[in-house]
Image 1 (cartoon, rainbow, N blue to C red):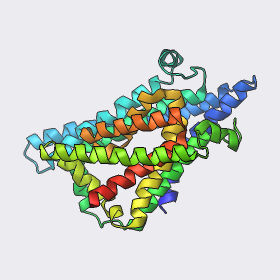
Image 2: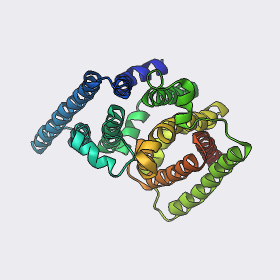
Image 3: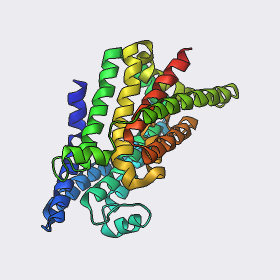
Image 4: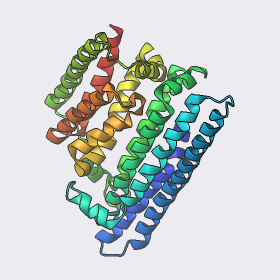
Length: 339
């Protein structure tokens, strides 16, 4: 069920990527792909327009609720404040996402990133980055504490349910990556694997990934412990993280899922598909923001630094090595927390 729901949620974005690749395929053959490119842009703009309207409605509701609060009618003040924050978090990035589709904007971006401003795939992918900001903005807008309260109010998910949700998300990331870099349209499966950097790692690369992941986990655990003793930890981040993944740490299946699902899924998408076009820094930045459960906290900075290390492994070895490192890091973090 988790897989079906996740596929339904991401199906529009996968379809847009497929259309964009078909447009680039036709362009590569010297055939006009304008109609397919226009369709992919049109669908993406439609999604953004819906988000803009929804965001504006939420913001207006927030303003109206604040006026009602002033009239001393019983309302949840935290919810009122959240509406006012979530609204702009939806419509502002959506406007930027539409702007990134403009040829003049893409040409400017191409001066800083190794993208082809004429590529429909690159244009769509660039615009998709705003979805990461929308997800983060909505999470921060609602508030980590409010989200934790909501989760506490529902029946806790089982280890199997939570693990299956992780694997469903990982599978969707993999599908998006395969389709995004041209599988089924511009590249064979072997060519797609090479483009994603998914190869059989050497023993040295595998050892480097394992040692790097475990080493990072030790260093970060020590660093976070020091910060916690200094009173610099974020209790809302800790509480929400415990509610989201805490049950997984209590079983071998859960621990392995935390390591392998994230390692395979996120690395295929970020280091495999995205980094060769968006570069090391932007990809690590997106990686950090994608972990919206940390909000904007010290943990976000930590994830960014981890993303830099994983990106360097992708550059100097391959995505498979980054997968091993990511999995080893996640699993080691859990084991260290239980020690």
